[in-house]
Structure formats: structure tokens, C-alpha cells
Image (cartoon, rainbow, N blue to C red):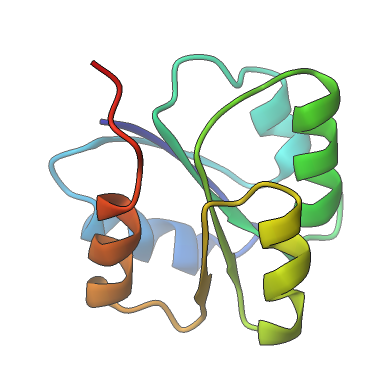
Length: 113
């Protein structure tokens, strides 16, 4: 599975990448970098709170560009859960992330033949 991680926290990106061993993982420090090359990913882990472009703006831009990647929203702020889900995230994980939560979120990704 090709997975993109978009988060401004380098420690979280690297920790999540380690937890996703066995998958082809690419990390991005901000959403604009991801949006420059969004093709070919099976799933996106997207942080809400980032300085350049937040998760809400990223989901809106993905919709505007017709970029359709199953997105797992992540944030330390549970108040943004409904916003991210309404904008198309398939699930929401609150930081700190747990291995069980990540596994469960990945299991919820619709599989394409």
C-alpha cells in the first residue's frame, strides 16, 4: 500500500512511518509539497494543524482538484473531528496516535481491485 503522511511535526512523521513498516510510505512536511505530487497514493494521513496550509484547507483543495485519496485525519484537537469528516476524511485519529488506532483506520480503507 502506498501511503502519504502530511504533518509538520518531523518526529510524528518518522514515528508513524516506523509504525507503517511493510508499506511504501512517503512523508511531507507540509500540504503544499504533497499537493505538488498527489498521484498514486492509496491512503493519506493528514494533520489538521499545520502552519503553511492546514488540513481543512488541504481537503478543500483536494476536492477542488478532484484528488480522491482515502484520508485519515489526525490532530491533537478533537474539536476538528467533525470538520474533517464532513470534508471527506474517512476517519479521525486523535494524537497521540496508537498502533491499534492506526491499524483500525487502515482496515477501514476501501480496497480497490
